[in-house]
Length: 342
Image: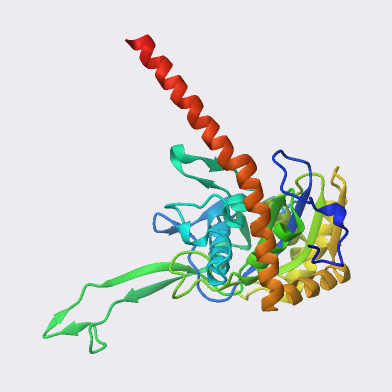
């Protein structure tokens, strides 16, 4: 079933291939914080000491959004939709506990269940970095846990339930490229929809962590493209040259998107791979068509069902059968080893 009219079918496989076939779809995304999220490890915000820009060579500390902080919320969004519409073996899946091994989530985002099998992720996400320095992108808040009456004391006793925590500020921008290897059209739409729909990232996602994904383009190529860090550094250079970075004032979103578009064009012109870029007017048309599919319930279910059918075929052909073969080999190997030991 064909869904998209704005894209040539040459960008997609008819079925999910068992081996890498050299087709890549890159989602060019700016992640914008809209509240006070937490991207942390061991109680501290994640950060990295890197060069400010390509031309601006001074080192600065930047906030870091690790890959799992990005991919996990997005795949959970897809799993939620599969359960909502009861598509595939959704009832068997329990994230980080048990996987059905057959759904689009399992096949596209991968899984690992100890000795029970694994599948490498076809969705590649790398660490994203804030455009602005760490010192201008976070703030420390004091947190408390009051009693029922709303105060911090009761019957003359004052609670010690007071803590402080660094939070990322609103309007901090994380350029991020999400790559899907060897996409089918339905798989492409599945990942695209997950990025568009996901609204919360990081710790404490029920209370904070609001993040909006602003896509500025899609690039189809026969290989991987630039890194998030290089793209971020190029954006920093362009905005710094125009005097658009003025801490502690937040960056202007329109100016960030303009600089991000200029940066991706400039960097892609230096690439050594074959690529087709959908940025600007061409992407606006594609984005409009994708949203028309994902916002209409019947067409959304058709897309999810198609993605699930492709994943199930792949699983039955390459995942489940290979697992049985490996199990037989292990059994024979164990018996042989036991015989030698005896």
